[in-house]
Image (cartoon, rainbow, N blue to C red; front, top):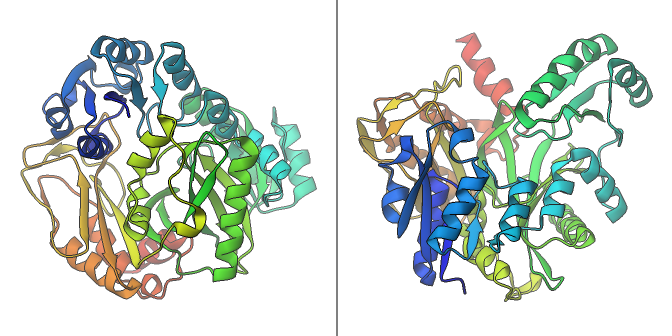
Length: 451
């Protein structure tokens, strides 16, 4: 096993990786910006190096400096966590060129799956269902018009290199498409350096369900069940659970088979996630592949008993998967909510100093966070300050534990989305187990507007 790794990330995911490395006897090297100098993850690592000024392009995205620190510290491998450089094919390639092991898939696969258009083509080749749409880039409005007429409205206009809903918009007519095209193209160019756009048929009231997979470098692929991630705000997940309360066992097995088929077709290795949109009749369609560890990986760990970071490290070190698909257990139900420093009414970030902080405790309660009383939430990074996970023998038990834990989660000095989360996990639609991607707009925001 590796003796030392560098973590090219920050916050709670850096702390999460450090915890597993301590269990395995692996030394850790943290990088931090000047704004994170006093953070908990910095203190918990065996070594820590300042990588630059607070803005991410001067610190956590500074590839050359990160690789220099990795070499100087004697690290053998790089764990990218999620976000930041985790799906940057150029970073993965430069790590390997520098003699470092990148804990993730190859740079070629990251690049292929990073392009939604290319990913669609590859999934079609693998026999995985995809949403009706086009597999070529739209260079201008006229091409978009022609494609829209061919597919039919309503449509989803999407950025091929996009993520987090950026560059994505529902359009109900040709007029709306023309109005949306240039603006979304420019946003995609600004955020991703790539303004390539394409179109897919809109699926009404979809469920967002994903399959966690593990794959080694010997061609072995196993699915670790699925996660329901339909509750989102601004196209970003806020509540996740495993297993999905919506799909049947027959649909579940078909989705697991499709995920394995997809991973094998592209020669995938390490941890990854195949994401699907599922309609009201439980027809499912490939959405995208995340070539990294997911924010919501703890719910999978809770129902399987596996440490996904440990599995990542072992695969990257060249080990075979130690279990088969049939040996992957599934016990109980787990729910995760993301705690954000934001106004629960507007979802705008709420930076500031945390004056009081207390995490909920108890049976079936798990916390993942890297803040404490006195921590400063800055405007430079994602406003997620932690994750709260509950497990129960049944979904009802997990729901009850989540509500109680949220009510005992204390954060003072800034606004958080905890009030919104309490309302969500108490809502009759959530408790019934039927949540679609319009849940927040349809229930939370709509109900707020009528009060």
